[in-house]
Amino acid sequence: MSRAAWAAGAFAAFAAGAVGYGAGHGGNPVPTVLERARSEFVPALVERVPARFADWLPGGNGRAAAPASAKATGPVVFYQDPDGKPVYSASPTTTADGRAFRAVRASEDVRFDDAEGGEAMPDGMAQGSAANPAGDARRILYYRNPMGLPDTSPTPKKDSMGMDYIPVYAGEDEAGVVTVSPGKVQRTGVRTETVDRRVVAQPVRVPGTVALDERRVTVIATRSDAYVDHVENVTTGDRVRKGQALVHVYSPEINAAAAQLIANPGFDGARRRLQNLNVSEAVIDEMERTRKVPMAVTWSAPRDGLVLQRTAIEGMKAAAGDTLFRIGDISAMWVLADVPERDLAGVRVGQPVSVRLRSAPGKTFSGKVAVVYPQVNPDTRATRVRIELPNPDGTLLPDMYADVEIGTGDAKPVVAVPDDAVIDTGERQVVLLDRGEGRFEPKEVKVGVRGGGYVEIREGVTPGDRVVTAANFLIDAESNLKAALQSLTAPKDDRQAASAGGTR
Image (cartoon, rainbow, N blue to C red; front, side, top):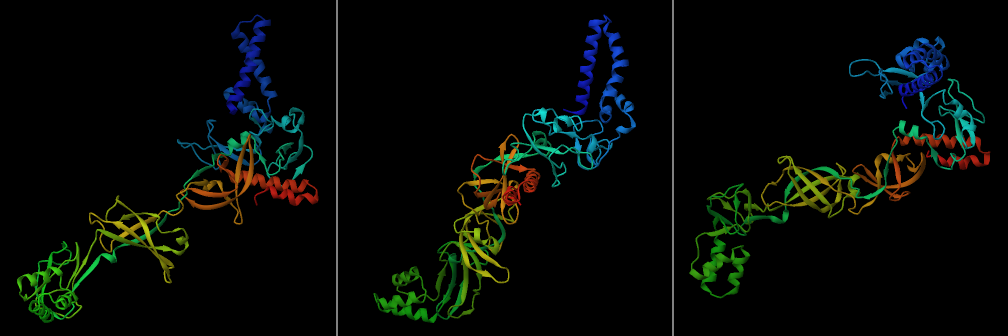
């Protein structure tokens, strides 16, 4: 309940009683009774209301009626909208039209953690219910310092700033469980989420380079000394088809083997010699059919592909083994990516990969990890990973740069919670379970892989549990404070066991 609403309600109730009483006993008309209430009863009400709340009365007259001793004291707790709207700030700020927020000090703060079932009331007005156990059926065990200091008291008291010590009731000291009032839960912004099973994957993003598939590259060369007689109109960058003529060469050794084949029809040795010299079967069959030795032998493309290199020049002499043409099939390409050593444990053969080219923004190629090379580069501390991609339209070209995203992790759903739910102490990890009715229990867990804003929980929680995802550090601090207080109030032999209730 807001301050303005509380004050207006009190005044309305008082005025209604005054009107009813005056109309029923004095017979005065309503306007007369209202005027009498304004002139006689309101000043009396102002005197009875504590000075610190006098400025809450309708019309703003209470501030003038409050004595000088009603000045707010204590440190500034927060800042409120100057119009009294439920808008607050932890630091000085201004409204949209430039007006400064009003500073609210400790003596005028509103308490939201009163006795169970009570309304939210300003500090001081709920002191009776907080300090008097007669208003609550539960038994008060002790009172703890409101500022979180390790100080308790068996009786009600105030700290150095005049703040009441907070009562701790029977049942609230349940081992390992922290009880927070509904008002404080709302004020601190506690949020929870249900534990569920989901796929947790942490993608590894690394740069890559497009490369030719080594198994799809062919070199055109002679196996004997030869002379280039003629080169077809084919050059580097051209696409060629299987069987397309590329170059015509004259080789004395090939011609001698061809003459032997013609002179001895059916002699298998002569045919085998031509095959060893890399003469194609089509050319050998043509020699046998025509019974003629050609001046130059034609070399054709052995596959569909792209001319990557042309070194053949008409009239040149080519030694045995010299490359005349180099042809690559680009219908399927490789992407080579260097994965840092720290991410290598999550990369396995068969994992899905997304590749994006810098030359084709918005287009994604999908593939899988084909090979994880078995060595680490000592200079970069990275291991090369090979991804194979189909390239039917020829978009992928050798030596292109690519952005590679490898989907690590298991495709099987696992128990997972949001990253914000896990409090990592360095030595162990803890989540806060919401047990309902403002009760929270710290629970140690064992975590697994992380990814997509979630973390796998291998032990500690089950699907259906609710974990705190916001303001969990505040509840965790409350848990540590409770453990510390228990260690102070418990016997010496039990202090070590009581301290186990905290998460750190």
